[in-house]
Figure 1 (spheres, rainbow, N blue to C red):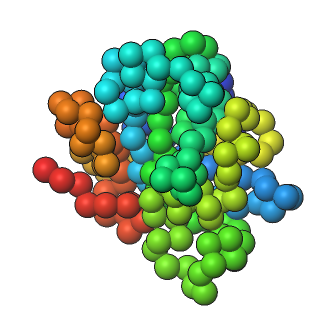
Figure 2 (tube, helix red, strand yellow):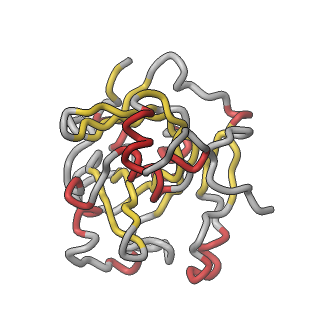
Amino acid sequence: MKKLPLSFYANKDVVQVAKDLIGMLVVTRVNDVFTSGRIVETEAYKAIIDKASHSYRGKRTARNEDMYAAAGTVYIYICYGMHHMLNVVTNEKEIPDAILIRAIEPVAGIEFMMKRTGKKRDDLNITRGPGNLAKALGIQKKHSGLHFTGHHIMLYQDGHSQIPEHAIGTSKRIGVASAGDDALLPYRFYLKGNKYVSARPKK
């Protein structure tokens, strides 16, 4: 198992990176507790031109400043005032491409995930959906601005990370209907048949 190199994040095609993330491992070290899961669902958001992106038309605020940071930066935002959303910044500094990690399959530290989420058993919702997975992994807004090559939130590849093309599904993104035509872009990727994928793809 090895960390993804900086070159992985520096890819200028954010849609391709979102697809390549399927099968990779996200590992967190929070208060010296390690938890991890395999990425099974992602969504790409293109800088500036994507109406569904926080950076549409070059919008830049304190909330999304980390999107403009160097490739491999952790970007966390809070949805509905309660759900922390884990994003991977790609491309290069000042070009705010980002990928939302929507779901993972738990791999290690499941007992800690259950404690953080208040669950009595490992049901599917423990890491299905971006809010649930962040809670299970101990991820909070304060982690925004860290780097995935660091020591707190990390991305790894292992012998199970190479997912064949035919096993990866594609669909429009979820919950971005207000983006008009851009809501229909095929920027969501998921591992076919995986029970932790957050929603069934719509045709």
